[in-house]
Image (cartoon, rainbow, N blue to C red; front, side, top):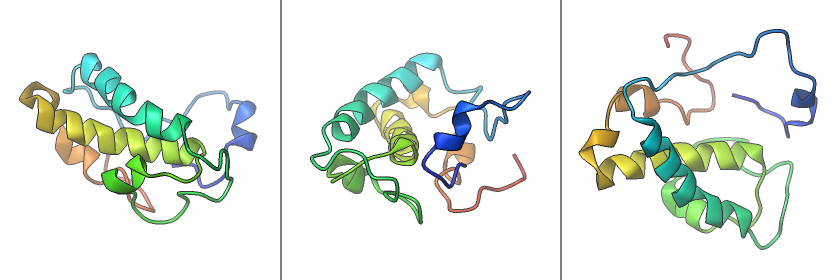
Length: 111
């Protein structure tokens, strides 16, 4: 997980690092999650903040009431929305065991 505001990510490394793959979750579930998480992030009243969402977990409720955003907030809220999509449709529950640890401060090296 990036622990910065993303500015250094404009210069891509030779091979991107994939932290997790959700191969058992259909792509449409990821799209549902994006639709659920987009509006609260895009409409954050205070706009961009480099320090928002850096530490700890982000709950779905906090995603719905973001005061500011950055790429880390968008990522964490997408993961929370993916969990919500599982509640909406059981076919979106594929490998949720990988998703449950994705929002941690330090990601597991087991995946």
